[in-house]
Length: 482
Ligand SMILES: [Ca+2]
Ligand SMILES: [Ca+2]
Image (cartoon, rainbow, N blue to C red; front, top):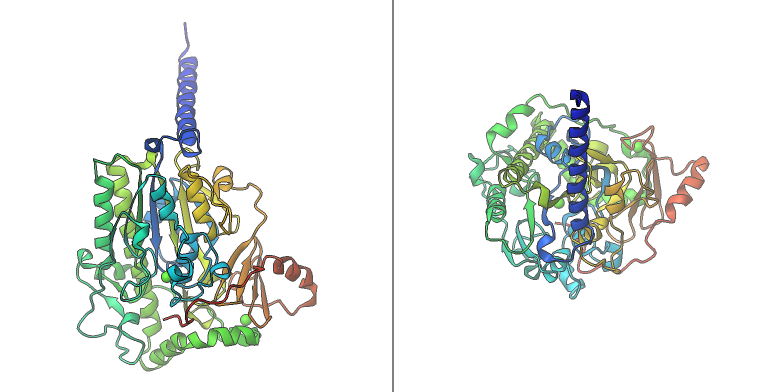
């Protein structure tokens, strides 16, 4: 007679084998053993605007909770050291969505017309369209100027434009002389439903619920928060009344070389303006940071609505999900505000990839990677042919095995000739005039002590210099960033 132990052992073996069978069949569908378009996974592609790393997803000690990003990460792989290709909306998005770096294309600034620079280059969405996918999108995918000039109709079968931002009758931050209404912050609007992003997510929920799909779906969801103005309905602000302010050293800039200062100086008005406002209205800096946190909480809640739809329609097993931010954001660290710099705070981003049958639930990868890998990764996950023009390679080996060999660092470019190389341990920055910075993340995660002038690090410097792009395409359009 069979013992209860051997029965339960058998049951466990059967369960494991059937689990493995599901795993192998989904992995086979993902990785090319099938060519039938109907067997290909749906893709949910979520891009969040200006979301930095001061979030519980990336740092349990960070003050901004992101429960829905963590919920998503539990389904797949979190990249703990992912970096943008450029610390501004247009060059970052153009690079990620075309697979070509700023130094390859000349698209360095927010005013560079990327389509003029790359009239024939297929975006990653166009690759999926050509392969038979239905490609839909909503919100901020490409960088939008006020007139939507940089949107690309050719990338979508159907697209819902970003809903225009509504503004309160008067500025809310009390700083009539600090910035424009686009750098305002406060409790606005009253209801979630009246926000820019609710409308974007509503569209995506309808696309996910469509029962008549006979083609695989590529759905791009572009969330606008936490981009300024830092507006979110009142309940999102409440948890942050006692938020600590970021640490900073008032003298942090004394060891910066002239190349750094001249690059960053045009953006100093953000920080100096906020400090002037702080002097006149104490508490303004804290209110600014609290409002950013509220906008992150709001964006996280919008991601939660998408995840609820995946639960509701049982889409997890057939959907590849990629979530990323176009760059990070300074809240006063290193006496800097906003983006437009090459340090950790501006370049470090959340990146989550869920590939059913491929990524282990709740896995993490600590290899330094950058957003240039998104395009080739998506092609591989969608079982599309690789594109030899891409400037980087697919992350699929790391999705399979997070500690697989990966000998290239992450590379970020800001305006022509300024680059940052982030390896496991070091951040190396080289400015257009040849000036350098070097930070040791093992002992200095806030990048306070520039070590580039110390002779004992000469080998580290030369190891990192070899990753700088050989090519430097001339800039397209003017380089102003607003
Ligand atoms: Ca952005
Ligand atoms: Ca310093």
